[in-house]
Amino acid sequence: MKESLINELKSKKYGNKIVGVFIFILLIVTLILCVNLGRAEITYVDVVKVIGGKIIKNPEMYSEIKNSYVKIIWDVRLPRILTAIVVGAGLAVSGIVFQSLLMNPLADSYTMGVSSGAALGATLAIYINLFYDIYVPITISSFIGAFVTLFIVIFIARTKGYISGSNLIIAGIIVSSIFSAGIKFIKSLAGENVSAIVNWLMGSLAARSWVHVKIGFFTISICIIICWYYAKDLNLLCLGEREARSLGIDTKKVKKIFLICGSLITAVCVSISGIIGFVGLVVPHMLRFTVGSDNRVLLPLGALLGGELLLLADTGSRALMNVEIPVGVLTTLLGGPFFIYIFITRNKSLN
Image (cartoon, rainbow, N blue to C red):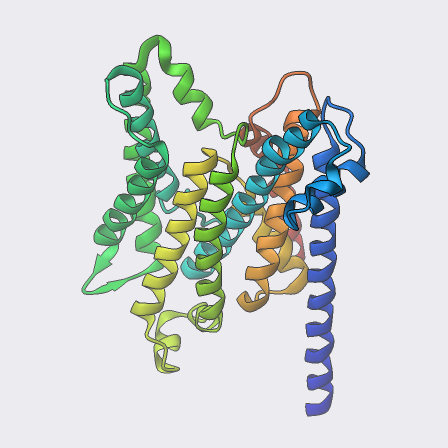
């Protein structure tokens, strides 16, 4: 009996590794394919030469390729594609963290109000930049908005020193509603210039640069590593706070770590790309159907799959039609029905 259980666990671990390698290879292939897509006719060989030459700092590898093509690949398409991967990875990981932490399959950064806080901060910065002779960085303002929201939500949810998942969700919904109204108020004040705010809120990865890639990669990678380090504690926390405490887990400390990391990831994602919904909600469910609920497995695989999905969505938004569609609109249009399908399938399997 014991030997069969060990063999089963080994087989599951091996299967998870295969899934991880498959998604990683798929992501690399998709990246090269997406760099090639666009109006400029650039071959796959040129794409590989430019990327390889830039990485190893050998300009001779791409010396015969037009300078305009090199700039398109390295300065336009590649930063946008890498930003999509980084933001998709961050949104998926924050979704896994919030769903496990709050023990609610519908929880994500939007439920916690963090996205609304980040959006309010960015909206305020755009409004000030439009109407006053002051420049406020949108990224920093969005970041501050997300963290102020987190502290407000935790302050409201705290009862006798402890923070329950249900209180966090209720506090998050309340704060999110208030901040959403604040965004509408600022939009109404903007008058004819409201399009600048609306375009940002719809979510887009257009014109993203290497600066966005570096900021996103550095911050989100550190947060993902911290979350993965404490993934075993998160697994025990999913059993219930009382059970986790009885097993020696410092639940207050672990909750704060995951709340800060999840909110920081959300803040960075929203500040870089605007509002992009459903990635953080759909990816955790897709993976749980395939590899189970172990957060030590879900977090790295979620990062890979989230990056892959947002990259595909962003490529579709710029290549499917003559006019570019905001990627946030596309993820909501496709993610909404897909989530309904997952929800119905899950209910049938439970029955």
